[in-house]
Image (cartoon, rainbow, N blue to C red):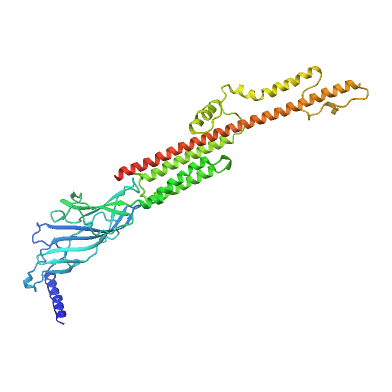
Amino acid sequence: MAGTNVGADRVFQTAQLSSYLLDNGYSSVVRPVMHQSETITVKMDIAVIGLLDMDEANQIMTANTYMTQRWRDSFLVWDPAAFWNITAIQIPIESIWRPDVILINNANDNLDGGIRWTHATVDFTGEVVWRTNAILMSACPMNPLYFPFDTQECPLVFGSWTFNGDQVDVIINSTVGDMSQFVGNGEWDLDGFPVQREVTHKLCCAGDYPVITYTIVLQRRFLFYFFNLVIPCVLISSLVLMGFYLPSDAGEKITLTLTLLLALTVFLLLVAETMPPTSDLVPLISQYFAAIIVAVGVCTVFAVINLNLHHRGDSKRAPKCLRRVVLGKLAKFVGVRTIPVDEEDDEVDSVTPAAASSSFMDACKSQDDVGVGVLNPVFEGDEGNEDPFACTASSSSSTCDGNEIERFMTRAMRAVTYLTKLTVDEAESSQLSKEWMHIAMVLDHCCVYTFLFIFFLITIGTILVAAVRAS
């Protein structure tokens, strides 16, 4: 019971002291100085507790902080001996004067900037210490160039809104903010918390206005984006190489490349949704996706060209320069079986496969000079539908037998000549088709090595640029 009485007495004494300090003409709207020329010095300390949110699209950072402000109130002074040796009391902050230090780059709809109105500690010398928790939402200009290997610097700018430096001077205790209480974040690491004081000028008002800038330096933890954006992009773009190995007769080369192109476009849109809509800087990963998309688009064009060459058929023989470059030099370079290229002109080459057939037919035609008849295919029949093997009764046996043999040999020769011509034409057509197919195959292998080189060049270049930035 004695302890209870002592506690009640202390509460009563504190209430009496508070009434003495606040009821004797004290005003919370008047700057607490004995002379108007005096300057109130406000010392600020901020400890960052955690990062609540980073809205990169709107460039707003939300942080949980502990804020401490110290100043001297000349009207809150008492003699401890006259007030039961009380040296310090707690007073609601709304009951006493407080400096109008605000977050200048505030992005919150609440004009107080998320600062809680807690109690302040006042000692008998008039020293006021106001410790409060503040959920600060500040405008944070983002630099997305090296996303997801980026470092962001988000400033917290504090200053007096009404009083200039001659009336309220805002100073700092240390050049580095308190990071000892920071709670880890899954996406960001706190890399630094420097503090800087500078003096600014307002166009509306005379005098100097000191401001304090606490810069929260955040290093992004890139592992999440690396596994969900970078690696899928690398795997999808590497599948383009399979499109060139896919047989042209399968009919799926264009479908595969277009599907991969759409998949890369979806990843690019995901990155665009994360980043702020700015035209000043293009994120490095967006540049990487765009470069890969362009490369895949070029590969799609080459796939269309190769399919056209593969299905060209026997309509026309490939130009000699194309045969010499692709079937000769380029095939050897990419490790594909080479085909000998004729050095004669195309006119000579085109006559060569049919020369035997033409000369053979001319030899058969020469038999018409001895009255054999015009050279025709065996299935066309003779004029008047006469049976060439028939002999009339009036014909002599020797004459009939000689005519039968001669006419039979002539028709057999015609049949052999016609079949030879069909065989030669078919072989020539097959040779031309295989030649175009071989050209398309060589170009497919060439596209594989070309895209592989471009792919590694883009990927390694992006990694090197990001590594240089990280170091």
